[in-house]
Amino acid sequence: MQRGKRFLKVDQPRIDLISMLSAIVAAAAWTAVAPAQTFVGFVISPLPNRSHDQSYVSGIDDLGRVVGGSFSSTNTTVAIGIGATIPTGVPTSAGTLADCFPYGGSGLYAMSPSGIAAGATSSVCNGFAKATTAQFSSLTSRTVYNPLPGGGDCQALDVNNAAVAVGWSNTTTGCNGALCVQTTARPMRFSPSGMVQLSMGAFPVALANGINAAGVICGQGFVSGALSFDRVSPLLWTTPQSAPTVLPTLGGAFGVASKITDGERIVGWSQTASGDRHATQWVARLPIDLGTLPGHAWSIATDADDAQGAVGSSALNSTAVTTGVLFSGGQVLQLSPRVVNGAGWDVRSASAINRRGWIAANGLVNGQSRGMVLVPCRETLTASSPDSSPCVGGSFQSQVSSLVAATAYHWRRNGQWLTDDGRITGAATATLTITGVTRDDTGMYECVVSTICGDVPSPAISMRPCACLVCPADFNEDGGIDGADASDFFAAWGSGNCDADVNADGGVDGQDVTVFFHAWEAGGC
Image 1 (tube, rainbow, N blue to C red):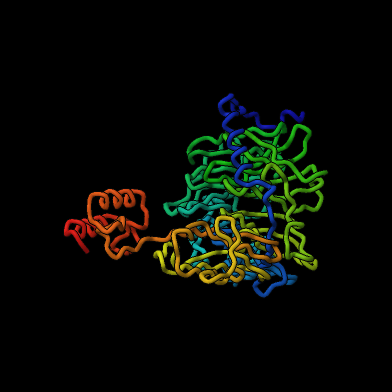
Image 2: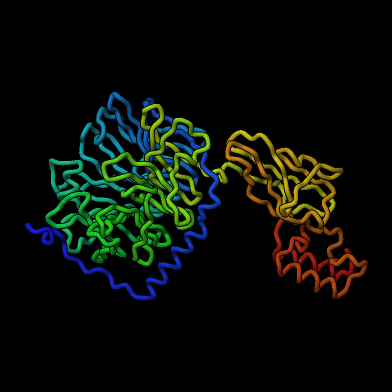
């Protein structure tokens, strides 16, 4: 058979100038919000195992909670969910403990931003899997979907916050695992209202890999006559009933669309004209080469966030050992050297990234496979204040906390370093206090904390003192009650200025207008 006859002939989308410019602008925006030059590194949080010596992670939500699996040399495997605490979380069973690795038992493959997990469950070793969704807070209380009539397996591979999941189901009883996926898989949409098979167009076999908040789905179709995981086309479904759109590649014949963001950025991999496999993002349905590490010819992108970039793996070639990477700012960043506390850890792959830039990754430590969460150094600090709008003459306090050990603190206001004096205390500690607050203290407060990450600035806290008037009718405090007070009050009220909070309830609203006018019309306080 001639090589050309093995491929499913599809029409490539027409690329017009407007679409091309849209893609270029969108790609530039991603670069702008995730600039590589400001990258400061990650703190590694190794995940505990459920009485096993090895683990993996596959999904992460916006709180930093992850799902994955745990296993050991005794070949037991169990799906796990792990909390967001640092440096370790507490694993909880999310499936049946079975003496079967790698296919039996349970698996959790993805997490929505709000913490809905998607995966599969089976009751016996090498038993047929059923697609599963569950809230992270109650992973053992699952919604289970059966395979299509006549099928033996189905799995959910991604899920959104509406608990709508996507994946696949086979149509042949008596087989499971990779062979059945390649020969009989059908793309599926699972939701609380039921399960629906997606249109397959002209493809004999297809999978649905990712879904965004709007319900747009991406995946892959297996090329007719060449049912191999390497011989696939990247697909996009705008509705379950619509025929899939075949996304263009980087010049080669094949590709996979793995995940889709709420901003409809699609990531996966595509074959280049030279036959290499490169991580790819599709913006406005146009492919953009995300590249590889220097000297490498193979890379994939497994997940992405509209603001944080994409994650995946890079390797010398298709059979070489992979290394985990972050695609950010137009660069491919190897993760292992950027882990500031990860001596002995080798990050082999990155499976997911959340909206805060936390990465669920997998690798080796002491020869054992372990899942891990990589927390950006900028995310290791939190700042808080009990009252960021103190009364003039009152007190202001701000605190910073660090997920990792701190060796020094230094507070600054509007970029200017603070020192202790008669009013300011704690300028070199985790808690800053200012007494006798004046209008001159207005500004943005942040603490630069020295840790293993280096000198990291905390999130800034905006402080603006409020008048806290004793006599709200004399709003401008000139000793008289007249039209100027009403004019100044409404100017402050209209802008949301806390000086207009004359009833001192913490908000600026219609109740303040009532209180002010009662006092103003009475001619006193």
